[in-house]
Amino acid sequence: MLPPSLPPETDLAQAPAEPPRLTLPDPPLGGAPARLGDRAWITGLVRDAGAVALGHLHQVVILHHKPDRSIVTTADIAAERVLLDGIRRRYPDERIFSEEEGQLAGSGTARWYVDPIDGTSAFAEGLAHWGPSIARFGVVEGRLQVTLGATLLPRINELYVYDGKPWFNERLMSPISAPTSQRTVLLPSRFHDYFRLSWSAKGRCLGGTAAHLALVARGSAAAALVAPGWSLWDTAVGLALIDAVGGRILRVADGLPLDPLAHEGEAFVAAAPEIADEFVKCAVPA
Image 1 (cartoon, rainbow, N blue to C red):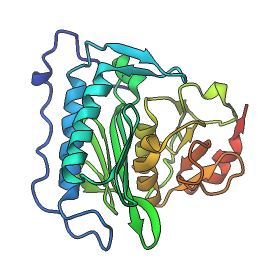
Image 2 (image 1 turned 30 degrees about the vertical axis):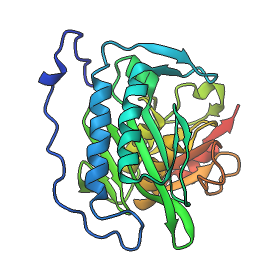
Image 3 (image 1 turned 90 degrees about the vertical axis):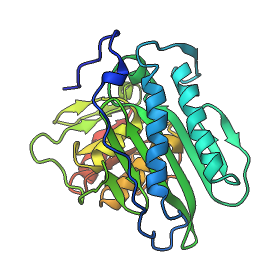
Image 4 (image 1 turned 90 degrees about the horizontal axis):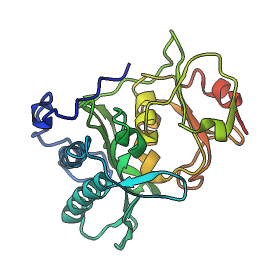
């Protein structure tokens, strides 16, 4: 069950306090280009953006609709400004691809993908599973991959960080396994537009793609189905987390492993290894 919505008159300053931010330096990252202290830094940055978004929660102003029918709100723009300013201060020369602002110039191969509020519709409806998601890609062992990223669900105070290791609320995540009781899967809100699904267990749509992938990584759901048309700012953190805990990520088209850079936008499933092959066969394109 989702947590009850705060009444409109609630003073957000009186909501339950967040746990204190990290203050200790992080250990070296074993060759990854992310610098000492980046986990603490990115935690603070997404918390700042999440706090800005929460300030708009009961006064959502929709600015316009995108061609894919998703919405852009004043909260998206305000949270995005916090994220972009923070990245520019710490990494002034790196490229940024942001959902609302577009591409910001930079040099070198490293780049950032920024989604100020993944799950804006859920945010506008007063639900819980939405929030900022940002990821840095850098070259590690000759391959471009996520070196640092974070997804925050500020309404329920859930923080997911990847820095070469997977973290949930500042604790290392355990290896993934499929829940044995219900085998619940997470679905996109308009999955019926894209798939015929023959799955015998429960299906839920809680909010944004970033949230769904994070929940699979920490074992709260057995799998997530992601519809075509996604961007790296939606998925990069969650895919890095799932890979780090031993999950599998398969293309719906052929059941083969997904390469997020080569196959951006293609429908896929992310799942615990025990059910990945079974679930991908159940998701038939409509």
